[in-house]
Length: 146
Image (cartoon, rainbow, N blue to C red):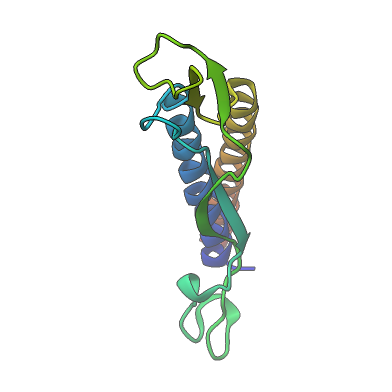
């Protein structure tokens, strides 16, 4: 494998994990946000899938490709709302309480979000390590042939 597809794969992973960390941070920031009586912020989740390779299609001759090669990686397919039910908390004095005294709170669990953040951070670090290893191998290869 040449340098460019390997770097492209790591770059897609870095982009996806950075977005995932941004969405998790948004979830944590809105963990207590309400949107009025009976409504609240809904937790967001990033969906990913293997990339089709269209973004990193290489020209003919680069990386040993005869007619152009498509690098693989990961693609963000969307950011969706978590369908789990919102929490109802009894707070009769709250200005956004319903007639029964319940306030609708987000379906964000701080522990789950922190676990997801650690996983996203580790995946980001793994992609950085792969990116740096690819650069190092190619730098050493260039040094050998000079």
